[in-house]
Length: 158
Image 1 (cartoon, helix red, strand yellow):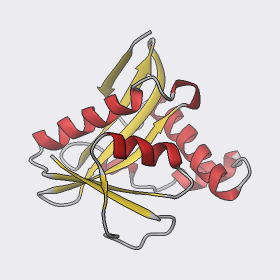
Image 2 (tube, helix red, strand yellow; image 1 turned 30 degrees about the vertical axis):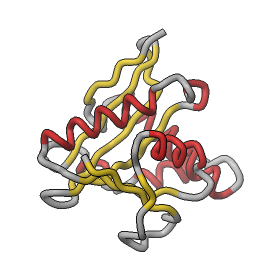
Image 3 (cartoon, one colour; image 1 turned 90 degrees about the horizontal axis):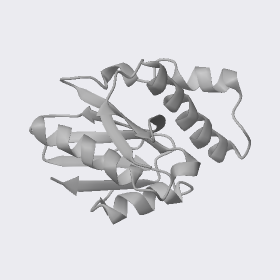
Image 4 (cartoon, helix red, strand yellow; image 1 turned 30 degrees about the horizontal axis):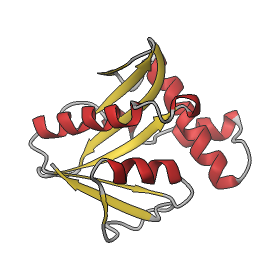
């Protein structure tokens, strides 16, 4: 079984499904219970995903054996900086290399946009994500914003 990672419109059926799965997992972990369909809809409404297109960013979908299994977005903050967002690998595919391929794809896009630093925020309970970022050269940095839910900040120089 192999991975492929390709750019995909954030509104495509595969992207929309993965974004729902992502939100369901992060919200459910935070609340300590499964998120309802209504809560997921509310969380995804006006979430800024429409900016994950050129020239302000990108969205990629990872497929494992041809099936949508992962996603990630990149949002350009300024001429030199972009933020990594909505990184998600379905639980059954974690540990198979998909996360690293997602990061490589968005970092490649960032370089093509002239971005020199990719940064992100995450939460303490998203242990797998924090390990993924550290394994791929992201280092913890001081907070660069005070958004709700952000507890750890990472950056990588490209």
